[in-house]
Image (cartoon, rainbow, N blue to C red; front, side):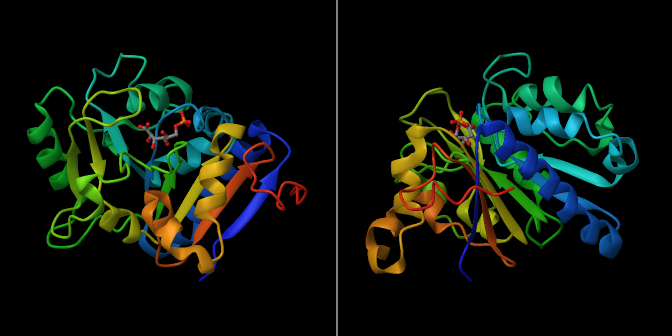
Length: 249
Ligand code: 6PG
């Protein structure tokens, strides 16, 4: 299934559209199963998406059916500016009065290995995998996603849903806990939000036609599949050559 790519004039437009898409994807999940299991990423790019979610007038009626997890987390305290949970709490969960019982962060007060083990127990459902309805992802300039960097153990692990990433090459160079590639591919839909010219080269590789599959296969974000598809929300600056003109509404 080919990924869908929507290009927007600027980062705010892309983030607002991604926020609306998460809400749209939540509705059939809540109707069918009574809840919407979402895992979000950190970094700079999703911040306006979190703010857009916080501003939704219908949010209060929705959040009690959302179960929120993280695709990865840096092993820092929640009040550390590098915390992925801390950013979502500051921009979305606090302002939107998101029910705390529906928020499932990585427990970064534990050591790295214990934090990964505890989060594995939190995301799995018995013998079943996480079964996220949506994983909301970004990419780094090196094509990483979540904390799956080129060569990361989490790319090859086949018997766990969560792994520790002791020392990524890119900043913030702190140990992380991350969903494995297996977890991301177990989701119904993967929604990537990408903005900034620094992502264009990686995105071009990731979205390259299959004829360059060898290159694309080495980039972690290129290896994400999802049961019902992968969707890209991209701003013009990050859009691969040839796509930058196809600006969505
Ligand atoms: C993390 C993120 C990571 C992020 C990319 C892009 O914890 O760092 O989950 O995968 O999505 O690094 O980060 P920016 O949005 O800051 O460019």
